[in-house]
Image (cartoon, rainbow, N blue to C red; front, side):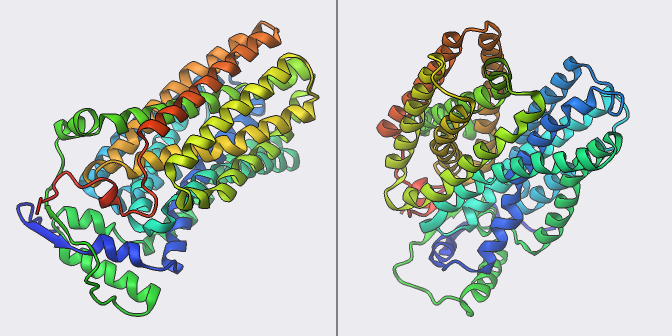
Length: 478
């Protein structure tokens, strides 16, 4: 058990040393072993949709449509509650401990889903899978931010977030193969085991990752933090870095935990404009994504006559657009800057959604053109959505980074998961294209509004250390 010197004043160059490192194998390991969380989330969402039909049949669990919907809601609820609980624990107990716990919960729960025996067990296990994924977002996002050098933090974060769509495509392709090649009674169970197998491999890889030196420094474990940074330097540049006089020194009070009152004070009193920006970005992108992706199958079947079994093919170009956006645009978030690129991607995705929606309402698009239009929209919207998570994770103090990520993730998931699917399903149910367009127009307005909020109050965090972007709450003034 570590001895916490929580009354001490820590003077350290650890943040500067981490930001000064060139990219090395250590950083690649961080991206692969931690960034897989987004792939797992995409995998789970895609698998759940792909096997929903089988689950309603005798070969599955004979679920009703309502029970399938409840299972999806249970996953979202688990993600929200898991993010809040494990985000709070991540700030108190450490990043490393929690990213093992949350992945283990996911691994066990998704394996249990594969052996579900009735509706109740399936719904329970989906809730636990969601809890593991939600907890992963908080624990993993904070760790990645604190280990990746500042000059490439934006691009790295965007690509990792965009990898959700690699998981979505893999889930769609994997479930198709398994359901086609195996007996359906075994195929859907084997599909859910994909996540368990992948999770096991990643769990072993994470053994080689250290605790965040920034978290250790904050909690008074300076010697341990120094050893970890020295080890990373040896892995990356072959020797421990010599002290550079230009490196800024961080001076702060070590503390064991941050009271809830300090969290509320930071969000509402110290940084109210940043809170407004984060809420605007997270809520608008959540509405847009859930509005389209929970109901795109209905649009294709009801308005274009696409057979239900062929709907899955249309997710592949959408997944490609969603991944290519952050991959190709991510570098500009570090070079041109956060405010310029976040404003641009939110505004462009809103305007293109309005254009595609208007063409759809007038019946001017074929099914292929409709899919291509969505692909263009989400090329920009994916970069925008990824930037929302980047904004939340880098613009609030070190002490509350994980719980703040959890709070905004929960709010965004709750708003998008509850409001937009119901609204769009209702609009599509009218059978009138112009009614559906009204929903698209509302989503576009939210995105453009978020762009204006970002332009007015966004933070220029590019190529700056996390401590420069937002000083720790316990910073000692010179």
